Length: 433
Image (cartoon, rainbow, N blue to C red):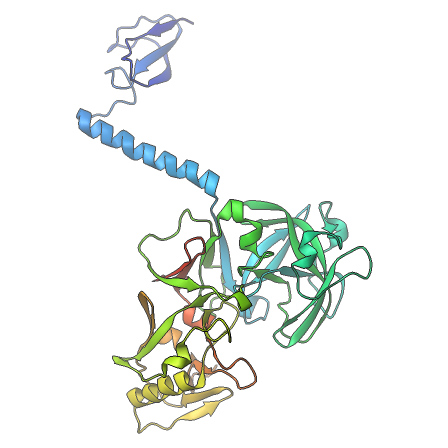
């Protein structure tokens, strides 16, 4: 086999093509298998466009391909990953949103609840008292290891103790308590493997609030997913939560700055040193229908000293507003639905109807952006469909009465983008149910 070279210009690229027989266009004789090198724009080239393009068009095409290549290279450096999200109601009978996480070597799959207001991850492990039937078998993982008392991570968990050589900690979650041993193992989300991820191995759990297969903390603290993968994902993530009625993993958790939406409006993320893990935003007003309701400014004001203000939370199901704010929203909602309709109560909901209603939209007016919630994000229906309630409530008296919580039902079918390096939160409508 001989190599025949056709003229190449200095700035051209070369393509190799293996051909057999005579090429009538190029007049290369048949000498068995001939390796031909073509100029990309040569009439002999199989890659030549059927219709000639101008030099300007060719430069633009190459520039576009370079841009795509640079995006690809950036994704390798910056990291991006899309992790499917599902409602846990039907799958694990938990009012949370869950992601599949593969932990250990070989990998064991756990359906972990994602929580933007917690930092450390924790999962039920072998021998756990009070846990369900699905646990992580530490003995089966060759990469599992306990975290010692002298490790820096031991100072980053709440209420650390050291009865032996392993660091342990205790936390309260909802109405439950958890005792866990600090541990490390490999964790894989989608296709990204994260070695030596620090988490709590639950040894004992009491109460019914604990997600049955563990929790993945997406807060801003030192042991959160963001902090432990800062070099990989650059403290940036977004999610779209499907309807709580959805039976599939149709939502997504996007990790890293690449692949995030471009057409999105932002509001600043606020920092509270006393509650550094929480994502505070500046909720300035609320509109029901076309009317901005009368809410005392103090009911929405951000105060780092007291902890009052508004947070975005993926773990709470229904939005809670401080009493003055909720009362103003509820009263205008009832007026717009119709004063002649009988209003009933159902559990913690005080604005329910036993007849079909046409509900007004509710718009959350943040600094720099508005988020208008349609009926699917506002109304909850009884199983039989005979009762419809406004899916919001006043903040209970027994918790911090100054905190407004924008919860996951109001977030469904929206893309929430947490851009921590730039201290901003983006929101855009997106169907993912």
